[in-house]
Length: 258
Figure 1: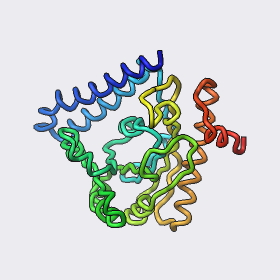
Figure 2 (figure 1 turned 180 degrees about the vertical axis):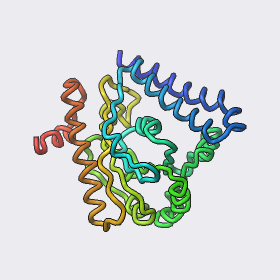
Figure 3 (figure 1 turned 60 degrees about the vertical axis):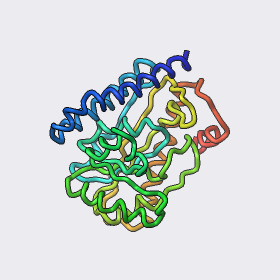
Figure 4 (figure 1 turned 135 degrees about the vertical axis):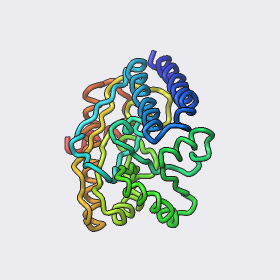
């Protein structure tokens, strides 16, 4: 039953995406900034609704009071595609840092440019940081929130974190608060499977780190907040559903400080 529900959801998820992009494209083309954001948030909310109704995968957010007004850097744990759309309604006009290849996808790339997403060329390595700074400064000047995944890619629940230099580079250059986001999405939306498991995906916005901290302070605070709380949310997932798949990595992490 889980497999069948997952197949149905996957089909409807992409139909919902294409439907929003195609049906509303004339309104987005001729409308103002508020129109494209209405369409985008509508897609995100209906996707969360489909996920809950079809697969029983609910979403729960905590710590909204920790999101500062105005410009901020939002550093989120990245375990699944879930956070790419589920976080959108939680902010006013968020901008994601994404692979430049995504900007070339027909229609999707047009929407991404309309939304002011910031492309990054990973092949440039160190130079890629400077390439995203212009877009990031423009977003900050508009009072927007910039969402970045510090590890640069999806990681499995419980895996050893590998934070890239991009998050500290932007923090040091932009002078805005840095909000850590912990989550456990990978338990219910595995990165290497189309299966969507019943349960509650939890995401929590942690207290913001103020501007001006040195590299050691910000990385220690960021990793401590994200990894510590993500581990707690991982435990919460397995407490809710004791039939969730288990592997050696997750089992070892769940024993830490238990």
